[in-house]
Image (cartoon, rainbow, N blue to C red):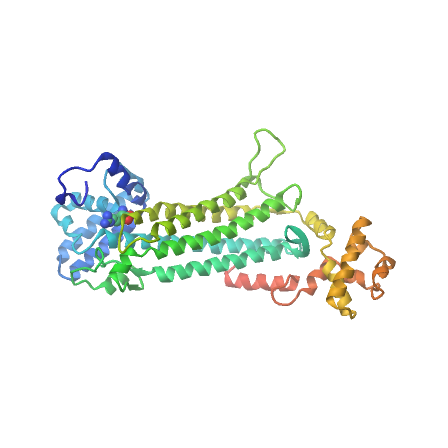
Length: 459
Ligand code: ARG
């Protein structure tokens, strides 16, 4: 049953009805629609539009409707209502008759839908925030239990300078902290109530919108009804935060897929998050990571889609805006699942510290150290860089690492090199020297871990 039959002579075409309906996806907003409806009924009561008794009846009928569908909004799908607002109203009328028809006084589905959607976003932002923090915790715990593992750090996927596994973990903690702060920003701007905006120009009834807003946990009510029924900035901002965080998760996935490859062999992923090949018995594929990497694409897709939907859309509400939901719902679910799977992966990861160290030793990742050593002996960095490069070439031709070259060989390239070169180019020395803020020195990393544990209340 539609809410708008009066002006029409004929029934809608079946095909249009199917095309128009949003119930098959907006049923997830049932709880929010009920919560906002109860708040609206109270506002109507306070403005003497309905009596206290009427409000109580409406509220208790809505609450019993909520209990009926709570945890299973799919039940709603047996109805042929156009959308969740129609469904709630129809079922309220079924319960309390004529009185149910008073609820929509002064309200429009235009302010209703964006109120519901904001409440839904707010609820889900809190869930995502919790899981972003949880993932940070697991990075810290993994860093702590593998604190001494030295591995190569890469630029251009070439071994560049030695780092530690713990340091790599902390890089992701930084990304997740930014994701956390971005999401809190979204929440701040989102938490303004559009209810009472009516269709587009405000409600003609004397509603105390500030009181209404705070009864639903909003910080304030919106300033301009024309804007607030048209506004889907919060969907864009949320999807943009989701996209950035998914990008971080996909880089995490890519790093681990490489670390897990036969070529790198730095880690072993647990059986819990890998699958086998139907043909090649030796294989253990990093599916969980590949899926996170892949799912990043569909979240980007939803962001691109809502940006395209809203571009050039005239004020105020247009039905195009119904297209905001499926991508949003799917993306939030995908994002949350990706965070949970990332936690599972990290919790069960095995680090092969011997292989990690060997790779760091083999990659000439201490060549910068030779250059720095020569600078300390008085050369300019450019001269020192050149000599160090020649030594790398020499070591490659002798199939040796830099610390395996004889002192006499070192001296062919620079007389400034003495016996103390060997202690300067150990992996440990490379790490320890980078002790200024943000550097890889184990002491620095340790301090960072302590700080992060304090911040995240890890005991
Ligand atoms: N299903 C609609 C949506 O998601 C609800 C608002 C409908 N408003 C209207 N004037 N038809 O956007």
